Length: 332
Image 1 (cartoon, rainbow, N blue to C red):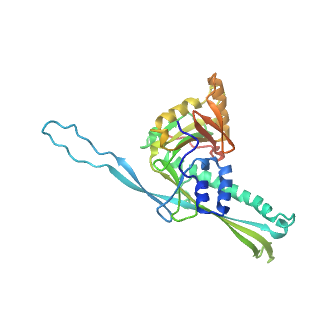
Image 2: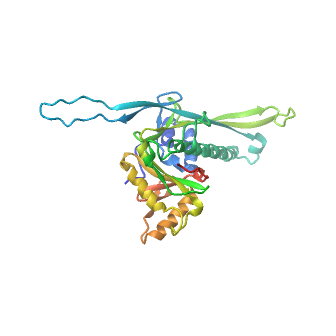
Image 3: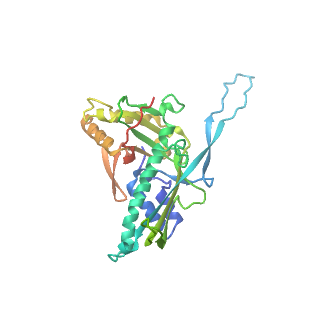
């Protein structure tokens, strides 16, 4: 089974190693606290300034059952190059100097204001990881949902339909993060994909729309990130979960533990990377109720990792991603 620790770097690990003064690491840590997918998602530096070119094996060489005095035809594997792009997310945070200095704790006040900006960036990043569409928003990167959107596609065997037919469908994702499966990317030679720059005190012109000026402290945030799916077999989507039909006793709606067992069997090896399940908090609440009802001895456990209490199921973390609490279209 997968473990909660891994040798592969998260965004926070990269930030700590690339910026010794700790400023960027501090921001990465705040993102980590509010976006649980970042606790598992490994990041690698891309080989392009705007993304990463990866070679994917699409076919295996054919072998021959040779007869005596018969020949063997040489063959080779088939490969294809895929270019994954990064998106660039930026924000400015500006606070009135008089307000920030009012209580004598300017830095603390600015940090509290910056947290709101960071939370907004966090939600946008989480949304793009799962729902990003380069067709609808070419400035972003392609998310997982668009890559697992049809059960008749080449990767359709890793799409498990839960039978929902309503309009409030949810998904549970099983992702094995690793350099040979699925990982995040940052642009070549970038600072861990996340920077925070204190611009200091500036004068904002025409702040009131009538030509007035204001002194303000400005902080600039920039995050660059992308997603590379190297091997589709290591991501499984349980889709068409009709949330309004879910029940604690499995009398109606999907049997979530059974579906998650099916997801585990679709992955070739959980040992290839860092595995985790992702869904919204409302779906996890229903799942935990079902586990308690279906089993006399619950398979849910709580482990303390780095001071944080993490719920696991058969050794795999159950991560909350609030951006997954949206009504999804039915997957055909």
